[in-house]
Length: 115
Image 1 (cartoon, one colour):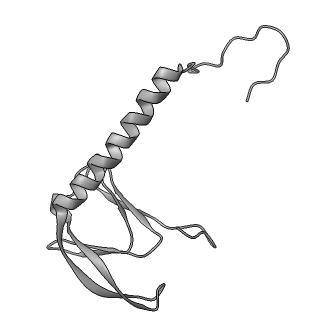
Image 2 (cartoon, rainbow, N blue to C red):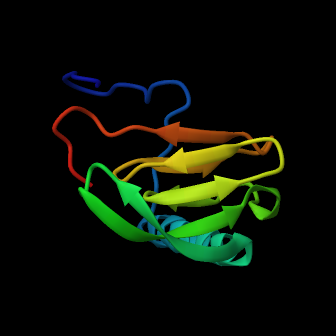
């Protein structure tokens, strides 16, 4: 945050964004989300009823092929990601993201946060 009176140079690395640039950035975000869903759909092997304590019930859950997930894919739990060597369980309220090196990072919700 910059507070000043008079003329002050912009902080290093600061760029002004025009309305058109903002719309383009938002369109890029929407496209990335769409691509993420397309990648997840390509990785979908099946669905299966799995017990989730958070729901206290069996819930139809996507089963994804780990090897078909691509960078940028986001998976919102509940979901199960299978591969030959292991299985990753993504509980309800958690989000898994595939990074550029194909790591799968699961973000847990904050205490009391409901997604």
